[in-house]
Image 1 (cartoon, rainbow, N blue to C red):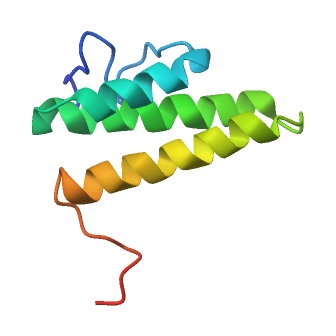
Image 2 (cartoon, rainbow, N blue to C red; image 1 turned 90 degrees about the horizontal axis):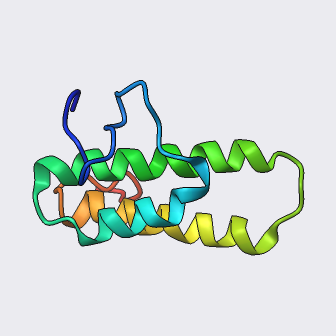
Amino acid sequence: MHGLECRGQPSFAASARVPVTDWKRQVQKAMRELDPARLTACVHDAEWAIYQRWQELGARSSIEERGAMAAAVDVLLSITIHKLGWPDFRSNS
């Protein structure tokens, strides 16, 4: 994945990061991306942005945003399973 970009944004492996407050925008980009090569980078960028925002929030109470981030993680997992063909680690088979 090194060197792939998600619609002009640095890939997960790149040293420059997108602003952490842009996690919603990163998830939306992943949802719109059709090219599997770029989609993987988009999912990684969105996951990283969510992780960074979660760390930024720390112990501060933001139930709404944390709930939205949890829902976004579910969307990203669905993308990796259904669009990228990754195995569903949650299944028993």
